[in-house]
Amino acid sequence: MANPHYDLIIIGGGPAGQSAALIAGRTRMKTAFINAENPRNFVTTASHGFLTRDGAHPSELLAVAKDQLRKYPTVDYIADSVSDVARLAEEFSATTAQGTTMTAPRMLIATGHRDNLDQLDLPGIEDVYGKSVYPCPFCDGYEHADAALAIFGHGAIKHFVPMMRIWSRNMIVFTNGNSLDAKVKAELQTKGVPIEEGKVANLRSTGGSLTHVVLDDGREIARQSGFVVEEFSSPATDFAERLGVIAQEENDWGMSELAAAPGTTNIPGLYVVGDARTGFAGIAAAVSEGGFCVEMMAHEVAMERWAALPEDSK
Ligand SMILES: Cc1cc2nc3c(=O)[nH]c(=O)nc-3n(C[C@H](O)[C@H](O)[C@H](O)COP(=O)(O)OP(=O)(O)OC[C@H]3O[C@@H](n4cnc5c(N)ncnc54)[C@H](O)[C@@H]3O)c2cc1C
Image (cartoon, rainbow, N blue to C red):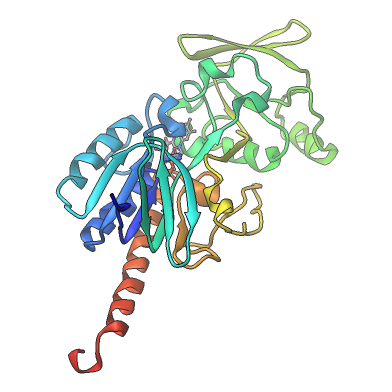
């Protein structure tokens, strides 16, 4: 049997891919929407900051998206994982773990990032990540306002600490054995922010709630919740690089951007949106990027079809 052929293949069905699929359906593009259904934020208890779904678990967004996409007959939702991608003469192909290969002249990568928590070297982090220790203060700071916070990190700390004061002035910086830049350290001390430079032996918790940061020297420092400055994430797939996308420069937060907004890359027909593009988009931005990217794509498709019409039929 011939491989199924589409106008567009969307790989990844987090908020960026879901929104892309919605606009693809509404612009009547024949779309393969392939999703492994295993995003990085499923570890969290609730996601915040996305209007109408503030406080919902990410699985609720996926369930609603799947339900609403059912009414668009040109969108095939495929719950599967893409294991291989290729660039053909004028098309792209995607092969899934279940062995289906499909082709399309356009491909949108929305596979997100994955967190490499082991690189944090914080024993016990898996028990609290997304439950009382988080990567994003805009996502979870409000729920921990005025709490006794632990801030884990050293690199971008000079940006992070001033911002965290939006939510709590009760914070201790734990560098986990790393030395802070002398100027940054002096500045934090002048502003009255305590710093612990010892190695963290364990994050003690009860039912996902952080209770103490235990240091190598045996001290147990009571804390209610925390934030990690770097979560050491990396792209969930290397599909963009494999297809020839050249990364843009890193931004001030050390995030490399794989494509310019709205997702266009140096490879015609190949788009990257959401966390896959920026490292940490947040739900609202991921939704915006996915939808806008496909709107721009629909313009291109319409103009191509227009140009291909014989002159007397225009
Ligand atoms: C702990 C935590 C808490 C967060 N809380 C919030 C919050 O409260 N508010 C907020 O706005 N943001 C939050 N974020 C950030 C938010 O989760 C992301 O920015 C957002 O989900 C990015 O959307 P995305 O669609 O780009 O990627 P993702 O949501 O990561 O989705 C990527 C999708 O691609 C799929 N995929 C990956 N590889 C393949 C493959 N090979 N084949 C098929 N599918 C594949 C995955 O299974 C996944 O479903 C949080 C992040 C974390 C880690």
